[in-house]
Amino acid sequence: MSDASAGRAAGWRPLVMIVLGVAIVALLVGRQVRPASASLPEVMTVPAFALTEQSGQRFESRQLLGSVWIADFVFTNCAGPCPIMTARMNELEDRLADDERVRFVTISVDPQRDTPEVLRDYAARVGAGPRWSFLTGEVEPIYRLCREGFLLTVARQRAESGKVIDETLASDLPAASQPQHEILHSTMFVLVDHAGVIRGYFDGTDVTALAGLERAARVLSRDARVPPALAALPAVNATLNGCAALLLSLGYVAIRARRPRVHRTLMLAAFACSVMFLGSYLTYHAFAGETRIAATGAVRIAYLVLLATHVLLAAAIVPLALLTLVRALRADLSRHRRIARLTLPLWLYVSVTGVVIYVLLYHAYPPPGLRL
Image (cartoon, rainbow, N blue to C red; front, side, top):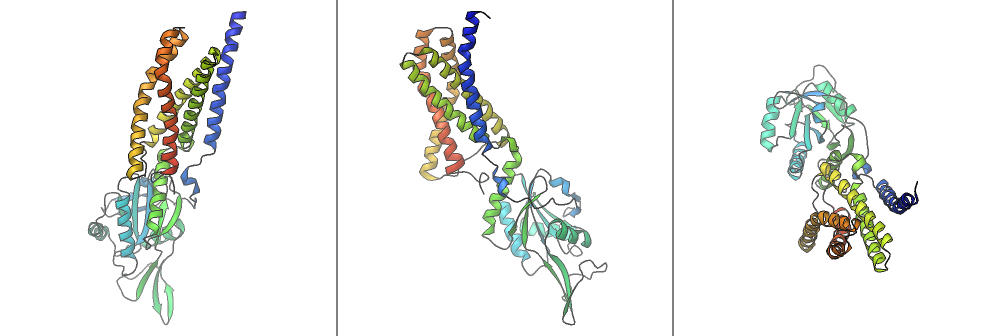
């Protein structure tokens, strides 16, 4: 290798080391981030089942794979907690109307009476939407599913001679409408993730439990869209933006100190950080979609102004940064200095505001679905 080639290789070595160092720091930051759904327990996988929907069509559990769903067990002529549970489920459906990945499943514990026609009328009466399925079938499979598949209590009982006799699995069960028989069942709502795993139980008669169930459902829905390996990318993006801002500042100090080689290395490293950020940002939002801040009032207005200027200037920085670097690498220094006076402050603004937006959006005022 000639002396000139060796000199060029040695000149690029600091740049490579800086970029690798930034990448390692970003990855270490990302490793510290866990999906919000990780704090929800993984109870068990709901076993496969096949029942009949209110439409009369066969309904299989595999139709729910890929969706987050909330299940409960009720019966239509219940004079106890069922009307309250149905009202709460209806309220949840309204709250989660904007999230099409969340579905609702109500299974009758009185299938002899709750035929598809009865359930269809019941669904219409309570105003159920298209994402809410009412299911019926045979007694034994439903009771077994409730007890073993969802770990919930259900029993059909008859008072006789002062004793309570469980007739749950009797083959000749009398109609539930007979007054001497009572169906006892759990009032819990069961939250199930997109893979069919139970992730939580919430009291279906307690209005205060709805908020927690809604948050948990949104968290699971969001995490279903974003692969676990990508969940940490917002923190990685903020780290890359912060490193770019630091490198830009150091590069400015270097050129003011008349150290052009150091300046060039730092600016190229900053450019590499911004390129990595852009790739990471586009990858994450291709899965996660839009994320909206939960702030209101003056804070929301200030955030939207900050976001608008950040986005507009970020779009302008791409051609500006490229043109500035090209002129420097071609040794067109007079034209490089002229454009750099515009590029540097704008680039710094975009990098710093990127970190500020991350803090506001993911920590200070996170939208539903980012935190439990």
